[in-house]
Image (cartoon, rainbow, N blue to C red):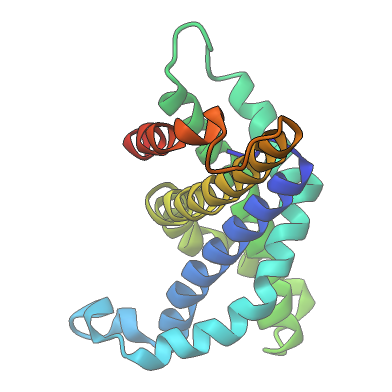
Length: 207
């Protein structure tokens, strides 16, 4: 998980992109009427993924902005009232925090989508916005919760962990090489270098 502000921004971007794309696939399928056909979502075609890619290309920015404004902090604050760090495992705490974040972000993004797609682009009366928002929220919430818990969250953590584990290894190699040169040893002969293979093996076993 992120250890500083820069890593937090990168992880937030990953989560925003994966959440936006998954939700756009779901909503584009609804726009095409696929769930109402006999067989439901089994009628999906590759066109759904392409159309969703275009919409997700800008919708992820809304996810990123609003999650930073209040979604992430609000979810964390709500989760703190529901979990007990002494009693609950890290897995339970993380799951509850994700659920609480969805509880805040799904109504927010449903409102954004209602304004953008239904009112501005669809020409629906502004007076109907409350009803449109509620309907959009009812449609989106189950998918948002499941997608966050079982797809966007795990995929984002996996990509983030793999990327920064490689970055950490490169930084360690550079620092050990510099230490070896200061001590009059070549990087290949430095004591730290000789134990690096074991360190990598241990790191791989933890992954």
